[in-house]
Image (cartoon, rainbow, N blue to C red; front, side, top):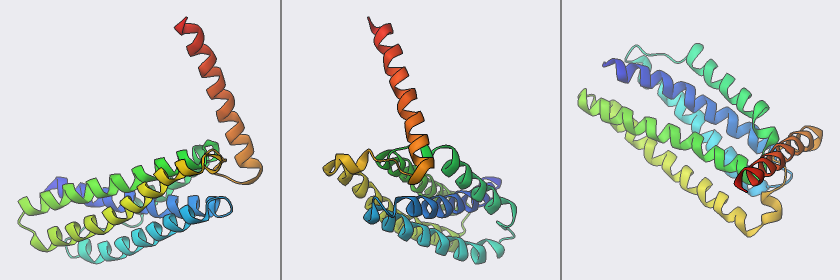
Length: 189
């Protein structure tokens, strides 16, 4: 197995776990205000969980494992993303950033499929290509849901996190944005 393949598979564990945990947590935050978007995130999280389970069998046969460290890193990334970023974002912003999670996983799946083809590992290549296609369907659904938020601008600008944490985070982000606009306006004159 080429080192690019080995390292990429471990990264796939981390990034798929990050997607799974981040989307699950964001779905819980959006349940009250954006239930349809929350359900799509939950569906994607479930898909990522299935990918991780199947990935374990495929990679173990090749001497590559994703527990505890690779998946642990993904869990930590999801926790940090949720705590540091999502609490300050609006619904549309959090959803648009969530799209990037699945884009990263799909790009990694496609890259690894190419390396597997070069390595003549047809079984791994087929597995990766199948999952890329499945995740691409999820990406399309999330992207469509994000764009559809334009039809409800009031919903799109609500805090992505309910309660006090969401109000504080969203308020801080608005204050920072207002300050940035003031600076840019003065610099532009």
